[in-house]
Image (cartoon, rainbow, N blue to C red; front, side, top):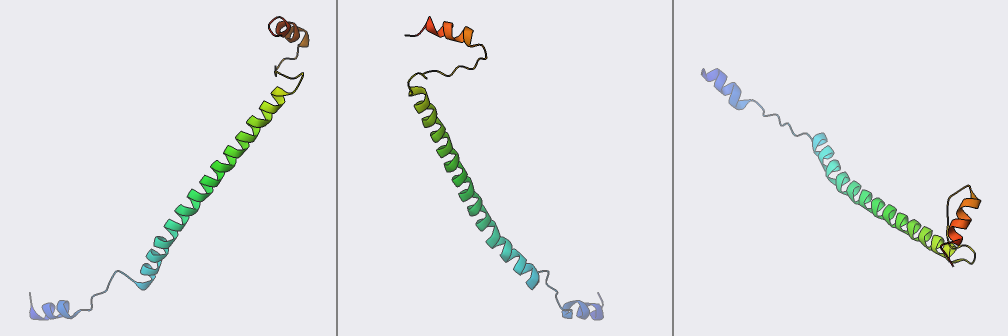
Length: 92
């Protein structure tokens, strides 16, 4: 290799691929990802708690309605003349 080319290569400024803008972007991603993950987990836990409370309230309401006098069973039928005799033969 000629001395002139060797000198040009060895004295050339080395340009870094890492720029301040790239470092700032990487730092923002490193901060945003954990915050987003924690927020998502908290929202999911809150939704699960709310759903559990709704299901429990519906179960209690259904149980109370079933224990009310003169209303022990829910039967879905449009023909009352068929359902009532069937229950009278099987229940006290």
